[in-house]
Each structure stands twice: as structure tokens, then as C-alpha cells.
Image 1 (tube, rainbow, N blue to C red):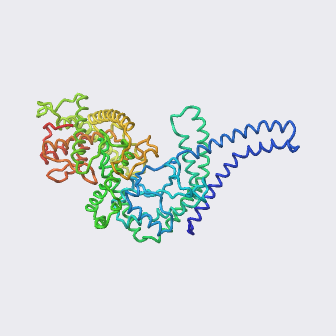
Image 2: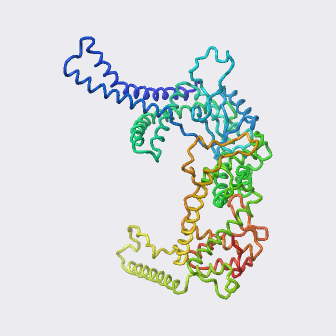
Image 3: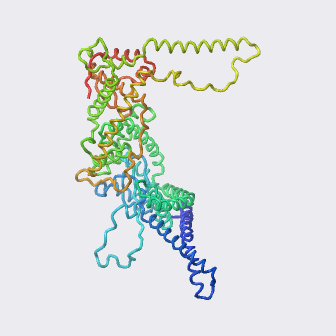
Amino acid sequence: MGVEVGAQVARARALMVLRIRSRALAVALLPAAVAVILLVGPATGRLVGPGWDAARWVVTPLAALVLLAAAGVALVIARARPAMSPTVTIAEEAAPDLYRMVRDLADRLEVPAPSAIALTPDCDSWLEDRTHRAHGPPPAEHHDEIAGAGRHPHRRHPVAPVLVIGSPFLWWMRVGELRAVLAPVVAGTGPSAHPDIAAARRFIRGLDAAVAVASAPHRGPVSRGALAGVGWAARLLLRGCRVPAGEMERGVAAAAAERAQAVDYGLRIVAQEQVGLAYAGWDRLLTRVALPAWRMGRWPSRLDAGVVAALTELSRRDRLAEGFASRLGERPACDLLEEPGTIDEAASLLAARLFHGGPAGPGPDWSPVGWSEYPDEVVDRKWRIDAARLHRVLDAMGVRPAPGGAASDTGGPTLSRVLDHLTDRTDHLTDRTDRLTGRIDDLTDQTSHLTDRPDHTPFPARSPEPPLDDEEDLSGPTPHSAALAAGLSAELAREEAAATTGRSTASASCAVSPPTGSQTHSDPALWDDRDLPLFPLQPPRTARELLADHLTAMVCCAAMDTADATPGLDWLDGPTLLHNGERTADLTPKVLTLIEEGDPTPLRAWLAELGIRPEKPVRLA
């Protein structure tokens, strides 16, 4: 395992974990040992008499029960399937250069090479043990008569862990940077191969899996009661192993970092900057670009390639990132793959499943979309769907079309209808102004009263005032905005409930089918996909945010239909409106002014500046 100090610490802590396992076994066997002594005692002429007979009758059944319970707990711990990260497995035929680079790196570090390589749609890399029988088929049998000569048939042979690489790293990093970043990770296979550390990790993973089995819902009362005891025992052992197991993992990490210092240490310092940059670009791409498409039943099929575009755009805007764009002339790490597009598609589908809860495979309501099709297939369609939903809610509320316009004659949906409905009336504005004036007069009187007293400080120390209630919250929405926002929330909830039901039916009837000829596949059968999404990107939108999004969509539809504007894609901000080929100003402040204050003046001024006709009907989805 090496002579690193961290490796020695890790082995010592692993032995502590194994001692806890041995103590638990000793506690389980103690009643049986006492029962054996009591039963054997009469044969030697000892432990005789009524008292010892009573003790034998009590201890022997108790020992049998403890043994049965311990055997049940041990069976669950041994057979429970440990958690496994959702990944896309890459066969060696699909990335021979990548496998060769990892093996060369392991040879330079003098550690075992990882047994396989997998990709995850996240900006992280780690080693994962998948030696449990539930994580894959058993090893192939040797049919040669002398293939197994000299080996014990039941001896456990150490298997190196799987190297999991964040897919954005392959597209954004250069080959040298990726090798430098992976060096500490690959170096961890050395400590992982030690028998004591491997046994301690198997024990911890078994306990964790047993707790998950005991916590699983939808079980009968008998099995739920039996598994409650298993869960209690597993949690008790986990609490005892928490400190030494944590110190063991820190020792393994320290040993791997110490060993990796001999390989590309200087380049690793520079590559760490790319890790943070890739994480920022990936997060922005998912939340601003991918999430709107996922909500419409479309999944971008080239997310990793989009990271490069997003970070290139960031380097163009941000002077601090200018040096990063110069790296693009070097060989990217994705060149180590035989079919980067196929692997990117598989990783993109897995990202949609993890972060949004989409189906496991493409279908009629879950189809891929390319970046060139994104403005028309996603942005335009999203805005028109939102605008149609907005007018459906207005129809349900009984709001009449705006009078005096073209829509009043044709009955078509117009932006003026929405603006007029959300515009606050004069009496309401006057009432709010009177409240503000009254509060200012009260403060002025108090200040004058305090100033007239020479022995009193004009600004004494006092406790903070309590917050204003809802009626006095001047930043809250107007009554019309609140009612419309509530209607939109209810309408969207009904649509999402219907879509979830249809998606569940489609997921149950469709199997994961990788592209034809692909050497990659995701492993949904090996991880629990019942609680998707596993990593939600954003909390549910509030009612006011929904109204702002729908009003912005209506404005963009009016701009496209009356002012020749076009939908566009901004790699950092997502859907955007283009006018004369240039991105328009941000609409959010103007839209919020209308929603919160009922004042359409800033928005109408912006519409007039771009030549948008709010009284003209727009085309909805």
C-alpha cells in the first residue's frame, strides 16, 4: 500500500472498524456460549440443581433467539445492495485512448489501474467500489482444465474500483489537465487494495445498505417489524463506526494526494482553476438553458458540448477569464473518446433524469433537441405555451379583451388585455399614496417633537420595528396580480399532475435503449430511481415568479408577431429575445413594476421604443 503516513493512519482506523465488527459478533455469540456452558456442565458433575436447571431453561431459548436475530441481521447486511452512483459506463472499445491514459497514469503512480471507467453528469471525480454481486454479473468462468489450478475456489480476489469522471471535464479540459486532475483520484486505488481497508469499507457499505432496506416503504406489518430491528442494529453499528471510518477515508485521501505529487503537480494547480470554472458553467447551463427545455418535454442532447460554448462566452464577457479561451487550441480530453457525440447524448439523458426526473428513454413526449433547433423548438414554443396558459386563466376569470383595439373586434389574444388587467386603478394608487403620506407626516411630527426637547437625544437607541403586515407591504403584488398568479399556479399544477401520470406510464412501458452500435450504457437497474429527481436544480417557483415568467412570455410573443423579433439562446442566461439581431434589454424590472405596483409605464415605454404593438393579436401555441 505504500509508506505514506496517511496510508498507515487509514489502515489503523480500518482495524478499529473491524474490531467494532468483531465486538458485535462477540456480543451476538455470548448468550450461545453461556448456554453451551450451562448445557455441558451437568456432564462434568457441575452446575447441577434446580437453580441451574432453571437457568438452562431460560438462557438456552434466549441464546437461540439472539443467534437467529444476529443471523438475520448478518444476512441482510451481506445481501443488501449498496448504493451506487448513477453513471454512464464506457466500454474500453469506446474509449481506448482514455483507458490507455488512465493505465499509464496508474503505472506512474505505482498503483493498480481502475477496473472500468464511467461518466457522471456532474463536475466531480471519484473511485467507486462495485464488487458487490448485485452490481454486475459474476466473473466469467474458466473452462480450461488448468485455468484454476493452484487457486482456492472460494477465495476473494481484490478487484480495483471503478473510476467515475465528471462528463463536463472531458469536454472542457485539455488532455494534460484531465490527467493532472485525475492523478490524486487514481492514486486512491493503492490504499483501496489493502485487505483491511477493503474489508472495512465493505462492512460500512453493508451497514448503510441495511439501513436503506429497513427504511424502504410499502412493506407488510410483519416484515416492517422484523426490519425495524435490523435497522436499529445497523444504525447502532454505524454510529460506532462513524469516527474511525471518517478518519480512515481522510487517511486514504491524504495518502493518495501525497503519492500524486510526483505526477503533474504544477499542471494540477492550474487545472484546479478549470474545475471551478467548469462547475460554474455547468450549473448555469443546467438551470438557465436545460431546465426550460426539460419542463417542455425536450432534453438537449449535447449538454457537455454546451458547457464549452457557455464557458467560451463567459471568457468573452469576463476579462478575468480571457486566458482560459486560449486553451481551446490544445487537444480536448473528449478526443480520447471514439464517439464523443454518442457519449454526450447518453450523459445528457442521464442528467435530465437525475436533475428533472425525466423518463429513462426517448419517447413521443420526451424527445432530444439540438442546439441549432433550440430557439425555435424550445424558446418560441415555451413562450407561446406560457402565453396561451395566461389567456386561458384570464378567460376562466372572466376578464374581457381590451376595448378599443383590434382584439376587441376579432376576439384574438392581445398584450393590451393583460396590461390593462394588471394596471392598478387611480383610487388604489391614491390610497397607497395617502398611506405613505400619513406615515411621513407621523415621522415628521415625531422628529419635530424630539428636536424641541434639548435634554433628549433626537435619535435614541430603540429596538427594531416589527415588519409591516401584508396589507402594508408596499412591495407585494396588487390584488389583480395576486389573483392572476394564483390562477396560474393552479393551472400549472393541474398540467404537471397530468404530465407526471403520463410520464410514469411511459417510463414503465419503455426500456432504456442506448443508440445503435453504442459501447456505452447507463445503469438504471443498479440504482434506486423511484425518488426522481435525485438532485432538483431549483425550488418550485412562487406564484409571483410564475406570473412574471408568463407576462414576459406574452411580451416576447407580441414582439415576435408585431416587431419582427426572433427567439434566441444565450449560453449563460438561457432563452432571450433578439431584435434586429441584437439581444434586448432585461425585461424583469419592468415586468415586476407592473406586477408589484400596477404601473405599466416603464413596460409601455419599452414596447414603444421597439415598435411593439400591444393591441395586435398574437399567435399562441
